[in-house]
Image 1 (cartoon, one colour):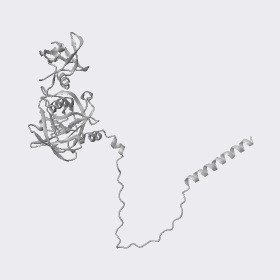
Image 2 (image 1 turned 90 degrees about the horizontal axis):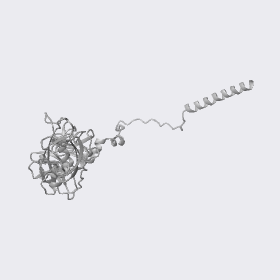
Image 3 (image 1 turned 135 degrees about the horizontal axis):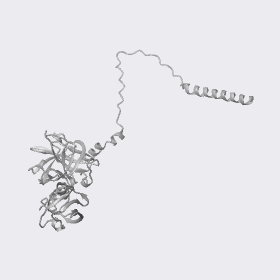
Image 4 (image 1 turned 120 degrees about the vertical axis):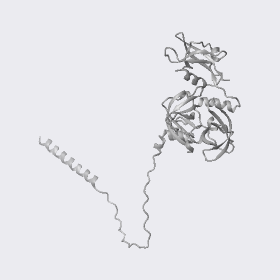
Length: 350
């Protein structure tokens, strides 16, 4: 018994001695070589006061800026955005190719044949109005690209955008060039006026001077041309509209080619279904139209184009005109309660 008791006492004592040694080692201050203290020197009253130590300015962590999606999107699109100045006002536009082609809104250029174009680098150049199309409010302006490093904007496929996704509008509202506002895509395939173009709706603030500028996604791709707002005050009320870039590109290609712009046409007159089903009920088929050639009949309920659902008549029009004339398209209908798929080659308004 005694040997075990003595061993236990020895172990406890050794542990305490080790703990005391470690504690003293941690707490013991580190000694440094002694430095001779300088003799005090009397201050000379004629010497200037010592300069204050400059304050340390905290700089932003670059990783924080890298996570700013709106800032990144704006940086991508801004070199492509231009300001257009005319005798009676100003607007915006954006470069779409290295040859100096600029897209804008027709109401921005009006009846003018020339506009002053201010580029991203601050330089100003004369632009020629190539053509306009009032039904869609699309216009094309051309500048001489010689000696200039033009940055074309990337164009999105509007079929890929989703309601609720983030969006950025860029332009010169009230003359403040390269102003960036942000919001979401509030709706797609909007028709705001009878016979009007297909629109992308957004709550990103759009004000006078924004017209003709780009509405973009977070990849910096253009989804529409900023065009109009619904407002009772004259300024943005969170209901803005941009011309679908798919449609704008179709019209611009025809203008640049020297053609009279035409819209795709199916050739039907439609109305809501009597029983409230979603879709567009065919009330009339235009003779000689793409619809007649495809076999569409009065009483058919058009419920889809190329597999994408059609909610009603305005939705049908928006889906049709976002295609170039001559496009082959599958049409999903309900006939006598049964689903049928037909194929049509879209005609044109000409």
